[in-house]
Length: 101
Image (cartoon, rainbow, N blue to C red):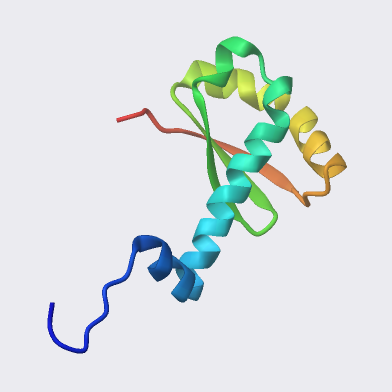
């Protein structure tokens, strides 16, 4: 390390950067949203669904395959109603297929 340079932890860097702090908050909220509706999703589907990005009033759920995506799309009105009842403004929930690496 050069003289005069400070070392930062990742957490400090995120806290010191408004864009990174906002991204972290959105990721946390996305996970909270999924946790809030988890009980409404059939147990067999739960492990194949991950929280995705929040973009304004739109939220995205990531699924492993097209069969899970199809079933989840049928549940979207119920999930949206549950989220609104908990105080989240969600005008749309998108489902994207994204296989795990």
